[in-house]
Image 1 (cartoon, rainbow, N blue to C red):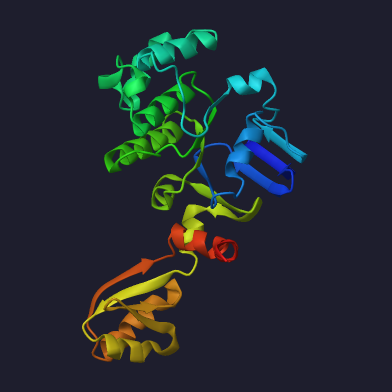
Image 2: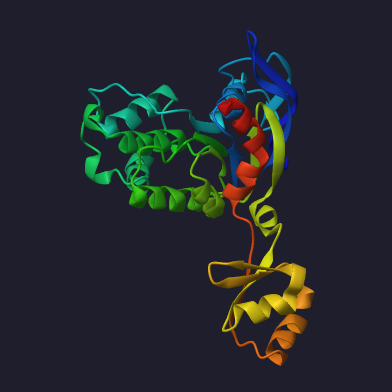
Length: 300
């Protein structure tokens, strides 16, 4: 099976509020998949339906080819939805042993390794009542991964973390996908991190899918050649309507096959080219472009 998630015409309403409005989404097996959207877009509702925590109003959703209500499917799945909560009197190590026993045992030997991978080895024997939000996130990720699931769903895994912690989590998520073969599905408001760590993304807005695709393809849309030159005004004259200035550089809206001819034309017109590189649209720009109308409307 090549897909881990499939939804068709999936809806969920809470009274007059529609959290999902006919969502059609396919998440392929392998890699890191980001589910993005402003608050209220339906991300957490989608995750809760996939995990069998709530039922849809209509439509269908499958996880690993089956229903999350089936125990075998759940045993192949790990998750962390919102900030995790554990008995405050337990240590981090005891929490993982407790969860291992609750799942039937068999993974106790892996606990030290997971504590190390999430950066909690030094805090393994501290009671979790004193943990920061970031430390609780780390422990929640370890709990989600303890039984080596085929797919793991992480809702805001870097919430409350400092920059080094975010970098560590990004590296862990990539290793899970690249080395452990786990399909990671995550939601995050850290769009720069999503762009660094995800292979594909879906952007939801008001319960509907508004954009989906490989990060590399989405960010290459609107690609332009950024030029550092010694005579920007002369370069803009050569480019005409295809040129624009930006922070002392010149942006050329041309295709890659046009670049050699442009460089020659600039040199022939006495423009010295110091640097030339291709730049695309970042994920943040795409996100706001797709959700701006709803955001503006909500702000009104």
